[in-house]
Image (cartoon, rainbow, N blue to C red; front, side, top):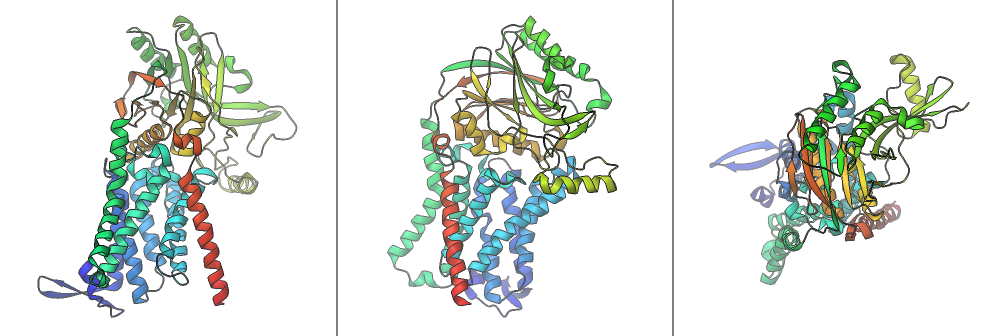
Amino acid sequence: MTKLLKKRRISYGNFIIFAGGMEKKLSVKTILWLLCAASGVLLSIPWLVPHAGMVSLVALVPLLLAEYIAAGAGIRRFWLWHYGTFVLWNALTTFWVCNATVGGGIFAVLANALQMSLVFGLFRLARRRLRGALPYVLLAAAWIAWERWYLTQAEISWPWLVLGNAFATSVKDIQWYSVTGTLGGSLWVWCANLALFGTLVSFAGGRWKEWTGAARAAVCCSLALAFFAPPVISLIMYHGYEERSEKQVSVVIGQPNLDPYKKFASMTQSQQTDILLGLYEKELSKGDAKLLMAPETFTFDVLLNDIPSSPTWQRFHSFLQEHPGSDLLFGAATNELFFTASPPSLLSYPYGNGWRMPRNSALMLSPDGTTEVFHKSKLVVGTELTPYPKIFVPLDNFLAAKFNGGSPLMARDSGQEEISLLHLSDGTPLGCAVCYESVYGEYCTGYASKGAGFIAVITNDSWWGNTPGYRQHLSYSCLRAIETRRDIARCGNSGISCFIDQRGEILSRGPWWEEAVLRGTVNVNTEKSFFTLHGDIVGRVSTLVFLLLLALLIVRFWVKN
């Protein structure tokens, strides 16, 4: 490719490629498709192959070269190529969403790729008015600003493919996430890709020969720093970090392995509870544990107006009275009833003479019957959340009446507005991230900033089947451990249940799609990491840089016109 660009033999129709002494013609458009496809595949590799995060440092170079060639050749409608790149990346890495909802999976791929493509399209627009490196700086800043918006403000949010997540299985390379958070990884990806791309273009254009020896040495050093300084710093941090422990908590994780598609048809809730308590009973016969964990939405019979009326709660309470040294954390699809003339929210459903408001909750139950409740706030669009309810609830009601027998097409769970902690009966505070919440880095620092000594993650990844989805989701908990410097106990309905230390290393893990029980110890640490204290500085600075460059771009267009 370097020789190809160096010759610069563009006739606005064909590239001339020399192979084995034979001159073979390929159209410019074919070359563009090959380059864009290469980027789509390379971007996907870190999400599909463990410990392959470094691939992301070169994954965007083919796309940038394709754009550079297209601009030089005067190719029109290049958005087809870069949109195709992002569709391929999204499809290869998140196709498994279709296992739970085909329509939702297709929408997630196309809509997320469209947003990526809009960011790239803004960069192409900037190339018309801004010179030198400024358009590329705008591209990196705009991308990271978009990722931050996804992670903090957007109601329709799917931050699964934040570039910094590429290193989720390469924890020894990213210990500095405790300072920068995941968007620090996104910045690293852009710096490395842009540095390599700029060097290739300079070399191909002949400018390399015009540089002095000192200039060439400076470029080589800069490239080396861009690629290797972050992992070297991380290794130093990794080996220098000591697990902090103010006290230890023994934990038993129950993994009942209940097929969510057959949950109600195959057995009753009482039978499911029998399975879980049987796992606990067997493990507790070997020794006590302070905390017992059950997965997300284990039961559906909890009424928030009268929690003790739940048969599952009653079974759990009786079990804890027989094991008075333990508390139990479990997930439940709960409901709250309101007996008012008007609905308490657009998201509530009619129920008898009142209204029902559904929630996805985590409950902490102590032997004396004390129950604390936390409601999941980061909800999955469509399957849990109807976003922008003033717009989408009336639309959903209309579509439901027309095509779905009156049943809403989108779920309408309600979350709580602010993070709160749960407590063991001895007063130890912990944060509980319910499933999808563990994808949001700065959100999860809220647990640590409020004083959580460790973090529990309860989830049900069974909906996706044996696909990369559950493995990707597991790896994101490793990022949260590094960012907050908190031990994590993770309980999945069908796996992967595990214990993660403060360096993001998985200490022990259970099997996938099997009944299992896992015992471990978590360290309580209330010291706050830099990222917990100061938040997402990389995202905020990138947003500021983007807004400044966007203002400059608008001025340039205004002056030109």
